Length: 212
Image (cartoon, rainbow, N blue to C red; front, side, top):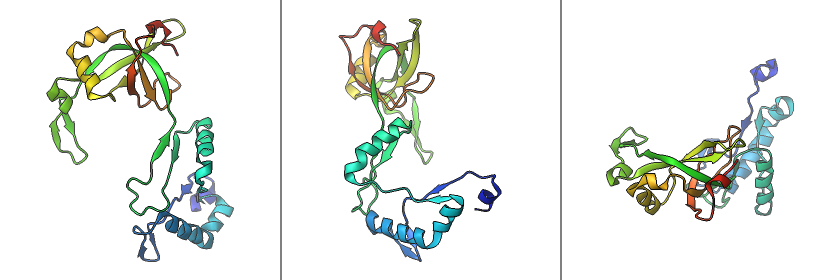
């Protein structure tokens, strides 16, 4: 708040919920109850920070009927998506699904990348890669044609069914030039497709029809 007053700080804190309040652990209460306490605490203690300095914000809660309109508005603004909450849930493990923007793209297989031999878990424990042990590829290298007709790399797709991965791994070179459909979150300004996932082969599609 002090730095905001001085004009050299542009941080804003978005508060979505409470986990502890006045010494009480709120992990066992529903999200709706935690939200009610948050709004009460915000109005009672923090509201002056918003009105004077716009530092602490409590995002508006959207009901079920308005969630699709909210998602579309976020996408039009260029944002990634929204998080949905089950307000009656207490666990918060499966109750906060992310809904991200997505689209499908037809791409040309330019090659493959080998699977990593070793995978490292969050705790630092290393173990042999399942893909490497099976002799499978790691990902498909995919491209699309630009305005000049040049085939340009747009993504590496590692998300695919084991059946597809095993099929390609038998003879990867024979799949070069084949067209596949992938689903991705969005395309970056330089043409890259974010978080691609394999959807299927497009035997009806000519590689030169894959453009961006």
